[in-house]
Length: 305
Image (tube, rainbow, N blue to C red; front, side):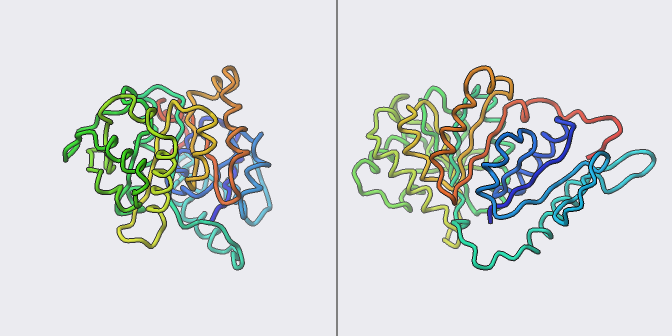
């Protein structure tokens, strides 16, 4: 069920921190408020909205609103993320969703990072950690130059498995279940084919083989299958025309940008608008910023989370 969580919080750092924590729990929710300019577009894709508000500043009467500060003791205000998550679930359960439709049955993710490798890996490690608690296995496939790929320690052979996987996909004989045969677990908790034989193998592959592979990942991620699988494709270096072709083959599209200021000054913000136009009603787009995952979580000295 696609719903929105609106943050009515003036403190931008507190809002960013809360957004990060909530996004790891509610992967299917749109979280708005830090950048309200896209709120209207997001609400078109959400079935309903729950508002979290700073009850030091706001007093909304909407029954779907939840105050973020629920406890006060010894002069400190306490924000309990666990309590907020429980209240969000209760509010969601109270909404009548009979007759609604939407995919809601897949956990296929595509990430387009525009960041340094270290920032990208930190974001993936923090944000997508929750996938490992939702599924038996999480497959990660990197579609990029081999020079940009991470080099995690794997428990099985590498041997250019990604290149072999792409060759099978190009042959037209790839079934979604075949993808698992090319993957081994790494120490980050993902199943992955690892690096290609040659750094440019991904870009030298037939574009149709890339699309076929993404289709296979999406099919694997449908809930109810055995084994229960979620998928993540991390994609870099492709032309915009190819990116547009990739977008339909995931349930959730993620963009990682360096910072909010870089989005405004570099023109990267236009990427969001371009991708939004390619989404179907049952897909969603989430924007992430490296600065939310790299800075230290230093809170106001009178606020505890």
